[in-house]
Amino acid sequence: MIKLCLVFLLLLGGVVSCQPQATPTASTQPVASADAARAAVADYIKTQPNAALYQADSARIVDVDTKWQVLVPRIDWVGRMPNAAAFEVDKQTGTVSTLKVK
Image (cartoon, rainbow, N blue to C red; front, side, top):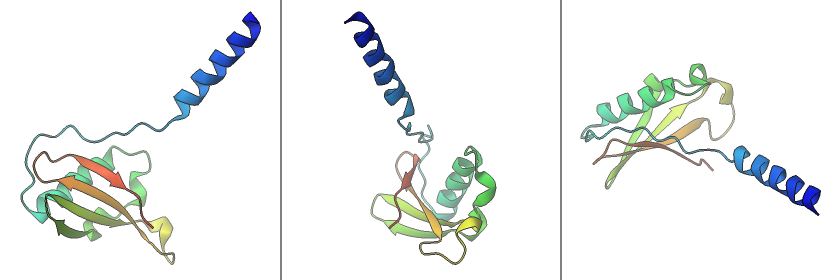
C-alpha cells in the first residue's frame, strides 16, 4: 500500500511539473501606441528559447479596446496558415501574453 502511494505521488508530481507555466512580462508601464506594443512584444520574444524564429519587425498590430493584438510572422511557418504567432499587450499594464492561433 505504501509503495502504491509513493508511486502515485511520484506520478502526480511528474504530471504537475509537465504543465506549461504562463510567463507574462512584469511590466507596469502603460502601452499607448502601436509602436510601444510592438516593442513590448519584441522584448517578450527575446526571452523565448526560439526567439530567432520570430520576425518582430514585420509584426501586424490591431487595436482591440483595452488591448493590442500583435501578429508576428515566424520563419518556420512560411507557406502555412496561420503563419504568425499572436500576442496580446494590455494597454493599462503593458503585460504581454500569448494567444492561440486558429
